[in-house]
Each structure stands twice: as C-alpha cells, then as structure tokens.
Image 1 (cartoon, rainbow, N blue to C red):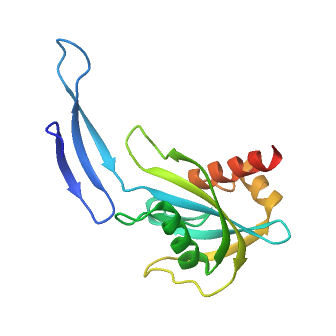
Image 2 (cartoon, one colour):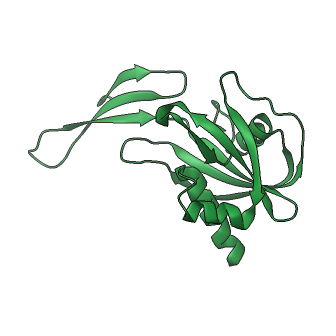
Length: 174
C-alpha cells in the first residue's frame, strides 16, 4: 500500500481506500476515497440464428432485476479469459468453442479502478448453470437486433451490457 493511502474498508470483493492527492505546488493534498477492485469480465454469448443469451439478474444495489450480459469478478491471479469462460458456464450453463476479446474499459474511473474486459463467445453448447448461492439469474435469449433495440429503448440499464452490445454491433457493421 502506498504511503499516501489508508484502507477504510476491506471486503472479500473490493477495498475502499483513501488516497491523498497532490493538487499543485504550495497546495495541500486532497483526500479522495477510491474503490479498489480486481477487475471483471462481461461476455457476449452469441447463439446460432443471430441470437444472444442475456440474463435477468436481480441486483441488490438497485433493488431490481436488470437485463444484462453474463459477467463476473476476476479471481486473484486469474487471466480474464479464464474468468470469462468460468462465468459464462456458471451464469448461463453455456460453454464456448470460440472466443474473441474486445477492448476493455473502466467502469466508473471517478471512484472505482475496476477494469471491465469484454469477450464475445461463439460456438456455444448448452449445459447446466452453476450459479452461486444467492444469485437470482435466469437466461433470456433474444434476437441480436432485439438486444440492440432494448439498449436504444432504455430497457437495458446496465452500463457494461450497453457498452458491450453497442461495441459488438459497431464491429459487426464495420
């Protein structure tokens, strides 16, 4: 831990630290609270006939079920591609033959250092999901253009899902 940092909260999934940042010569350092996160992945699972497997996922933080792409937190020392494969199977039951990594992005860099890695999964085979205790998830398979329209209509509110769908749609069109 850097000398200018103090842990405020430590949890199994993330830490909250206070960092003191220099703002200029002869000016006092300013305290900033930052969430330290190991990073995460989101997966665009493409099925035959131009369909995508979304999920309905109850999110405690917003007290509602959101429509999302499958995703999950990277375990310590785990490559993002391994996380993507694990999370796809755990949340949806699918495994994939083909993987493509898209550009990663920061979720909310004003307060959070979480980097989101995006993968497209194709050649899917269905199997049983292995959802974690407490997860309230169900698969939602839709046509690709319906998923894009759901973003445009505001039915999909989850940032990582919006970014990944629109990024893949843009790449598909190029």
